[in-house]
Length: 444
View (cartoon, rainbow, N blue to C red):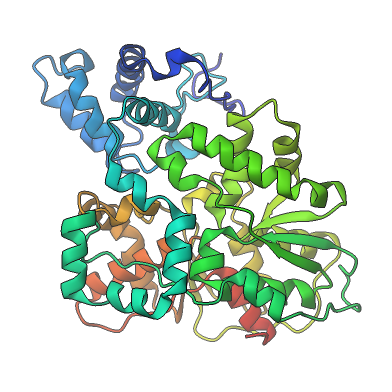
């Protein structure tokens, strides 16, 4: 095996049905092996807070080596991991097929899975990750929930009960879901577009369905203008929140449900488009690693696109419909970690460069948010710290628009910009790149 992992990275299936997967003694032994390699390399020191914590533990240990770190302290490293996958995809020279066989994020996942199995995982965090249940309730009373989330005294009370940091910006809820709006607002498909004849399913994702239907409506309008007939479906959340906390069995259940309900679309030749990169990553990569024997999961994986990736595919194969106009003021574009982890390139940047006279500053670094992880009281300060370089670049860019493929990352970046600006002007309404593309077409 050549040094430096010059081969394409290979990810092994998760052996989550094997009792050894949850054996903490075996997990800690593997962590000691991996941490020793990480300590000798230290290439990931600036990716997230997991690696600084690990290296501080080693440096402050009696031996100055990993063998001097107490296994009980390994949890500090695990708790800082956001499962962004950037160490595996972009930094680590020892990922498979290298003989060292390092998959740091999935090892952190395995530790959390053992905690879930042993009943040691946070019950509060478990309830916060029930996105379908929570979102349905919040959408029913959206104005009240949004008011509560923006009222500081009430947020202080929520922080004490639910451990959600009172400063962390929380997503708004919509009283009308994307599925509802799509059903009520049919679109005429442009038969003169070069890509006419394509058909796609928009997998709404919990965020686009309950929090930001405008993002999904923009995607529908762009695709209809480009000749693509679409249907919007939302069988269930992709399970990323449960994945982050280590409940792999729950994720497998989500994967079976969604792949079963979308399978007839795949068989009928529909493309499947996920509106949020974290969800696209789950459908494309994580589900097949959890259920490698499931033919429907595999077929769905092979039919799935990220929305930016899909528009770029249309541009490359058939060509886009006319009508794009320049965007005034330019765009500071954050490339989300879970978009990067799909290993398809900077598709959001490629898409926005299809707009005439593009003025784009690409920021390719972790925002620090990490899904539900970043809003928790114990993590929020770290999330802001990790994301500060992104917020600084976005602020210094002076662009009129702030965009990220990850809506949670976008809000987090703006919040970091506000802290750095200290009262100065900051764009307050970050958008998904597909919304900017729709603006360029004059569709919104």
